Image (cartoon, rainbow over the protein chains, first blue to last red):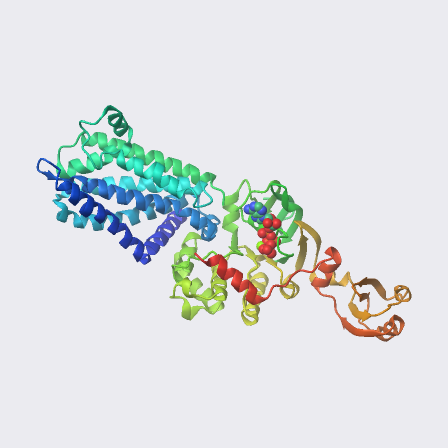
Amino acid sequence: MSELVGLYALWYREFKVFLREKSRILASIVNPLIWLVAYGGGLGAAISFGEVGYQAFIFPGVIMLTTLFTSIFFGLYIVLDKRLDFFKEVLIAPLSRMTIFVGKMLGGCTDAMLQALILICLGPFFGITYTPYSLGVLVIFILFIAAGTTSLGLTIGSQLNSFEGFGLIQSFVILPLFFLSGALYPLNNLPDWLFIITRINPLTYIVDGMRGALLGNPTFPLYVDLGVAVVFVLVLIAAGSIAFKKMKS
Amino acid sequence: MIGEDPLMIIKVEKLTKKYKDLTAVDHVDLTIEEGEIFGLLGPNGAGKTTLLNMLATLIPPTEGVAYVNGYDTIKDPANVRKSIGMVFQAPSSDDILTGYENLYLHSLMFGVPKEQRKKRIAEVLKLVELEDRANQRVKTYSGGMRRRLELARGLLHKPKILLLDEPTLGLDPQTRGHIWEYIEKLAREERVTVIITTHYMEEAETLCDRVAIIDHGRIIALDSPENLKMKLGKSMIRAKIKDPKLDLIKGLNYVTKVEEKDGEVMIMLNDGGSHIQEILCNLGEASFVELREPTLNDVFLQLTGKEIREESAEGEIERYARANGR
Ligand SMILES: Nc1ncnc2c1ncn2[C@@H]1O[C@H](COP(=O)(O)OP(=O)(O)OP(=O)(O)O)[C@@H](O)[C@H]1O
Ligand SMILES: [Mg+2]
C-alpha cells in the first residue's frame, strides 16, 4: 500500500514537472512537424506507395522518433536529479528501488504519451484516417516504445555521473535504431545487409505494427510485431530495475 | 535489535569511509541515546556529512558497522530509512514545484497517513513561517526560505531519528532561534533523537546535550558542551603583553594552563576570575586584556591548533544559491 502511494507520488512529480515545462512540450512537437512537413512533403512530391502518400507512410516513424527522444532523455535526466540532490530525498524514502524505478518510468511514459497524443491529433493533415482499432493499436505500440526507451534511458543514466555521454547515446543508440528500422522506407527490396539489420532491430516490428494498423499491408503479422514489442519492453524494464538496485547515490 | 542496551538508538563501531587515499571518516565509535540532541562539530571537510550519509544508508561504509534504531544500515537499510528523517546540506527541494507540493509529495513518499497529511503540512509550514509562500514555486524562494522548507520537510513525517546536516545554514538569527526551540521540543516531548552537524559554535552550545568534535574524520573529543569547556577551566584570560613572565604564573595553584602564541598569552583558570588582579600584576604591562568563559571554539583550538571557521550567513547563502543554479 505505502509502496503504491509512493509510486503515485513519484509519478505525480514527473507529471507536474512536465506540465510546467511548456517550452519542452513545444520543442518536442516542432521537431516532428519539421520531419513531416519539410522532409515528408519534399520527398513525398516525388514518391508515394500506391494509394499511400509519403507523409502518411513516415507518420508512424515520426511519432516513434519523437517518443524515442522524449523517453530516452527523460531517463537520462536522472543524472541531473542525482547531481541536484533532489534524488537523495527519494533514495532515503522508505520505498523499494523497484518502486522508484517504476514511478520514474511511468512518469516518462506519461510525458511521451501526452506528446504523442498531440501528434496523433495532427495525423489527418498528413493523410491519416483513424478507426478505433487502428488508434488503439497505435497507442499500445507508442506505450511500448515509451516504456522501453525510458527504461533504457534510466538504465544508462543511473550508471552515469555526468552529461558527457549524452551526445554519444544520441549518435550510437537513438539514430541508428531509428534509421535502421524501416521508419522511412519500406522493408522489402532492401540490400542484404540492411535486410538483416532491420530484422534484428526491435523497432522495425513496432513501426511495422503501427503502420499496418494505420495504412494496411504490414510486413509481419500483428502477433509477431506485438510479441517483439513485449519482449523489448520486458528486457529493458528488467535491465532498468537491476540498474536501479545497483545504483550508487 | 542490538539487545544489550535498548536505550542506545544509534550505535556506530569503527565506522570508516575511504575515498582513494583520503579517509573521510576514520574508525568512529559512537553511541547515542534516545531523545538526545547530539552535535557533530567540525571544520569544512571534517567528515560530518559523510558520517551522516552512512547513517542514512546513502553511502556504504568502507569498514565498520552502524546500527540505527537497532537496524544494521548495510543489512537492513529499508528499516533504517523508515526510522529517519534527513535535512541535507545541499539543496534538495524541487524548484519547479511549489512549497506545498514538495511537502505533499514527501508526505506520500514517507507514508504519512492520509488523514494526517493536511494537518501535518499546515503545522510544519507554520513552524517555518512559510504559510503565505506555500503556493508559490520554490524557484522564487530565497536561499533561507528554501532551507526552511527543507527543514519542514524533514520534520513532516515525525521520524524517530532526525539527521540534520547544517540545518540552520544561512538562516537569520530569529528563524534559527525558532528552529532550535522546535528541535528541543521534539527531543524533550516526543523523544525524537537528533543528530545535527554544524560549525556554528552557538548552535552546538545551546542546543546539544553532547557534542563530538570531529577533525580529519576522527572524533577528538566527546562530551557535553559544559564538560568540554570545563576541561579548559572555568574562565580564561587572553592578553597582549610585551615580555610576559610566565614562569611565575604557571606556579599559581588556580592556573590550569598557560600558552603563548604570536605575542598573545592565554591563561586558563579553574575559578571564575577572582584572581585576575594578581595575575595581571605578575604578568607585566599589558596592552590588551580579556577575561571570559571558554567557548567550544577554544576547545577546538586547544585540540587541533586551528579554529573552526564560522562562516558568515551571507557567504553561506551565496554558496547555497550557486549550488542551486541549474
Ligand atoms: N564522493 C566523494 N569523493 C571523494 N572525496 C569525497 C567525497 N565526498 C566527500 N569527500 C571528501 O571527504 C572529506 C569529508 O567530507 P564531508 O563532506 O563529510 O565534510 P564535512 O565535514 O561535511 O564538511 P562541510 O563542513 O564543508 O560540509 C572531504 O575531504 C571531502 O573532500
Ligand atoms: Mg558537510
